[in-house]
Amino acid sequence: MSITRVLSAALLAVGLAAGPAVADDASPSPSASEDGGAPTQAGTSFRTATELDQGQQATASGSTGDYLYWSFPADSGQRPDVKATVKLPDSHGTQTWQLDVYDGLRRRQACQYGAATRTAPQGAATVQLACVMRTVRAWSEPWANDPLPGTYYVRLTVVDLGNADLGQPVSTEVRVDSKDIGGAAAADGSLAKPLVPGIAVSADKSDDSKAAVLSSFGSDDGWSSGWWTDRWVWTGIGGVLAALAGIGGYALTRGTGRPRQVPPGV
Image 1 (cartoon, rainbow, N blue to C red):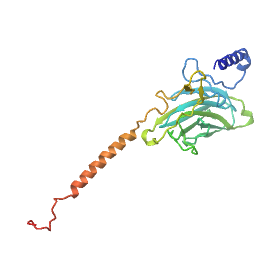
Image 2: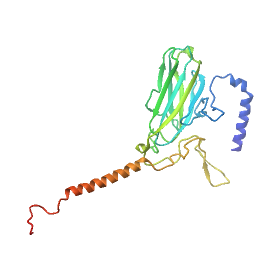
Image 3: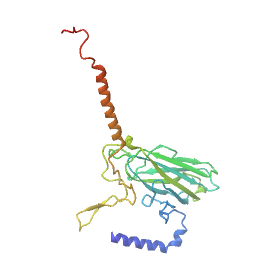
Image 4: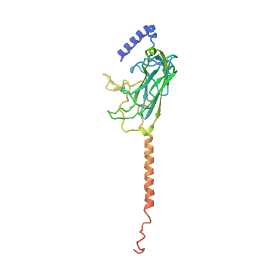
């Protein structure tokens, strides 16, 4: 770990020395705002994706043709809603922008609804995109492509434009919210570990214990920490209603206990 930190410090020093050359590059950087608020820049790949918490609105400046990346955490029972707004230059031709969401295994996730691909006509000021994902599941079959707890990546880029518009400056806004679906989406079983970067297990030779290296963000209470869902409430209510229905049915059908056609003396 110490060797990795030394190499990182050396690379950082080299990057600072080449500051004027980097400043001339219009491509975005994966760093976030210094005050700890919402990110003001985006990453350029999966590995450099800027971390974005749910409920924050990230902004970034770039050029048409760049790939802009953000990452956010999503836990089981949540249905993420990703929205993006691209502010286009004053003069431009027809452009088509696309918003893609990938899971921790970098599998592209389908959108339940929302316009993830939109074409901005010539002269349009902005283009808005949205992707409402499927509900994140606690467990899935290995062959399925269901969304699972962990890190998700947002990629925003232009997929169709004229050569004259390539490289023009644009500004973007990205926001991720989610709705807690609750017990309606609960499933039996759970993942051993969430799908987050750096999930590899490292062992120290001087210590028999193992520690998992997880992402720097995630659920405040732990990934899929609670076993309780509102499904237990509805199951209990259903059991009580079933018992009352059985008692009521028995009271209505059991009668007086003696058939009418039987004489009293018998």
